[in-house]
Image (cartoon, rainbow, N blue to C red):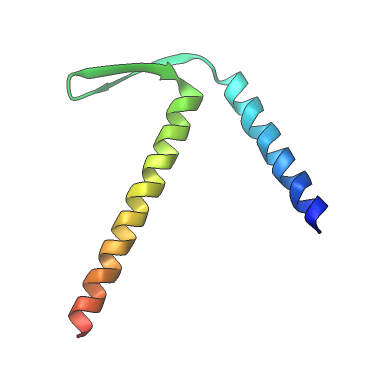
Length: 71
């Protein structure tokens, strides 16, 4: 079973690397009078990580509010 997980992790890593190589075109993002130029793959990964962080924060905040109202 350990080898199947390692194989799946390797395949996932290969897909991620292939995605990053094929999407290396630079894009410019404008945000509040600031501009950032970075590869589109990096932008997608950054937005994904930011979404995980903010989603976890909102989930934790809602859980805290629900526990506070039931006391």
